[in-house]
Image 1 (cartoon, rainbow, N blue to C red):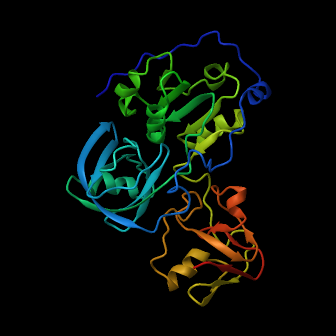
Image 2: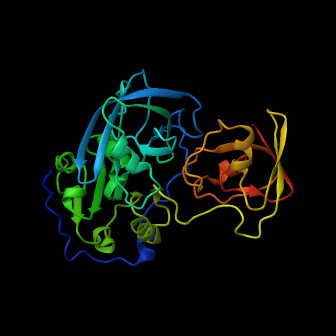
Length: 347
């Protein structure tokens, strides 16, 4: 088990007011940034690959890492994730944490979540070396953008999308990482992070990070990234409204039939079908009854797998993911609904 890093003590750091902090952090550009974001990012790829688990390793307490091989793989950029279709049929998203230049394998890591939705338990208890899994993607909604300096705040398994970013930053780049976890034994990749030095990496274990002190003196124009438990992300977002977040779970349970919803029609333009979505159901459920191969995963509006193009009609967006530009012509059919009596999808 890796030894914990020496925790960098920032005693006596001047506490800036939240308003001052906000003014010191540059508003990050809207996703996608064409110069840096690869063509594979954005809407889900329909191509599926069958890959073999070439290696399985426990990299921290409760954290398993898988290396998947078996095909010439699409390239990816730091921040990207893939969909894994587990043996039970569950589809779950996992951040890629290997080398983007390696087109022979994908590496992911997952923490066992006792009270989760079942995906992590299935990986930990049923996916072993030699197993074959269907893989879709990669996609990237958490890309590394160009900036004069970076601050990364991560908790636990939230290190996975950030680690490739740290590797990709050029030598001499101005960046800082705050990495929090329950215990040092439960925090993966500490050995590799130690190589960056304690002047860049602050590890906080067994307690809540004191964000005001740790992030008091940010460089002008810094871009803040955060990935981890909801409490950590909410605290960072309160201090830095322009923070770039990567969520592994939704903030609240979403779905149909809870807001005075009414039934409406959905026309599937390419399929030549018209469906009725009941007040207590979703577009996804209605579509899958006719088109069972339609891609989906979280059913809660945060993963993006079910994104579809809207040809006509006004949408009531209930997701936590799409940008304003994406909402102009698309929707997540697992949670969003028609504002009127009818919408038309490019399906």
